[in-house]
Length: 547
Image (cartoon, rainbow, N blue to C red; front, side):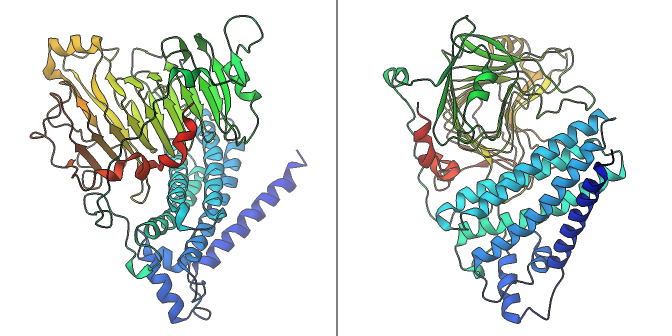
């Protein structure tokens, strides 16, 4: 115990020094700032949603600072605040052993803050250059998301001054990171001329530089011969022999931070295990023997009261390593208790990840597309409500979306929104894009629906967070979709800030005459915003996933 006192003193000193650093940076220094410097900063800060904080925090910059240098300085501030919160999260975790709720939230915060810090460093590391600006925007978007989710988890268990103080620190750090992200967005939209910079806008009020962006379908088909040519690095099998019997063991055997694909072939069988792919396991590939033959299954769920299992932790498979690819298998969460609880089949925090011919099966909260850029092709996603959710930039192409009945039927029926996107900042480059998909009920659901269609209400989505963004393009919408199309979350929450869009959908649920007034019909001019290249920069990285 005696050895822990110096460590605590060192932690306290580091927090104190970091706090002083942030205060010094935030205080105006008129003796070193001239009018030219303030003018440059003021113009850059017009792009942010918190311009006063932006201007005060950057007042020490020299008069000749370039836009990239201004953004880099804003990132430094955000990083310093995030590092402080990482330390505070560790302290909270160490002090919370008697409370499972706080322990679970603090444990997530330690992980989330580490990710947030790494993403800020990655954003700044290669220089704030225009040719990678969309990458930087994706990384900074995720950095904001992780900080927000840490604060959100803590608000559920806010039972002490220590937790409350950390939430306050997090809110401050989120604001700093948001300002840096907004300036990155402005640099992407308007270029180096800060006089043109404006705060981020929704698709309702902007046109992409008045340029028509063409929507190009992306070909991801591969032949059976190409598929057979893939040589696995390791094989997992239920049968006895030379193969590994555990998927997690195969993941653990992969090299850390690999620049090359490490292929894990998973033979047919049902694998009942919880699988975690950490950030160090990059470029992993899971190849099964068919979505009905290779199944990874679990039954973790979030209890009615917050406890040791959070939504983030409930996933059967959780992926954090960049460049993950999965093909020809099923991710499943079989929990189906008498009451509805969140039970995630797959959680994805992997940038540049792709899924081909996969199934995701659960009930509430099936697929947690948490952060960063993701692509799904020819997949089946099944659940009851909010079963595709998160704050990723994700494209679903030729996917089958199926609503299944709840365990407990109600005579008055139920409301089942398919999606719940979680964008919390208008500058985040996130959203869900469904292109050439189909939305309908399972056979079991359709039996209930046909018996009494008026009480079984399916919607394309509802706004989980303030700036949620979801669009359906060229998709078949079955008759289960209500005429109003979209569902409110709680009263008028987010109805003025969300973006819900539709373009050339068809089928009995696609009639637009009865749609809610706060959804949009996307114009031919703007539909290209949601292409694979524009939305997730897929032409740069998807070819490497076609195994």
